[in-house]
Length: 127
Picture 1: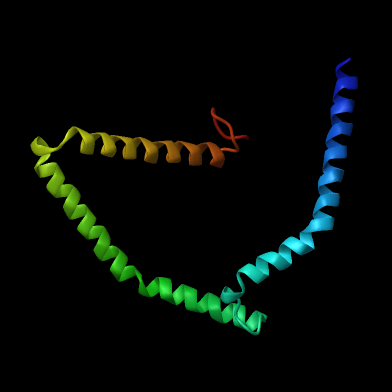
Picture 2 (picture 1 turned 90 degrees about the horizontal axis):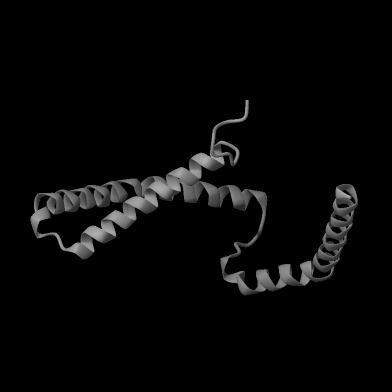
């Protein structure tokens, strides 16, 4: 009984995959062309491998050059947090709640990353 049910589900899945494949084959090119047309202001001419390598280098060095500004912003934020901690007696409930929610969100993302890193298991790694 279970095998028959699984076989019918497999056939249904194959049918849906076939329909999706046909849809992509029929409409994929039009979508690709539309997407390129909508974003043509971002396309560098000529679109060659050399141009891609040049843009990759520009992005890398631009990000590298932005590090001092980002570290300065980090230290400003850290000083702000230190001031908040020194004046915690004057801290409003809303600010404390926002800080607590932010901390919980950071912890949730950490847990999600751990679960993904373990292969979507809660208990541990596959050995």
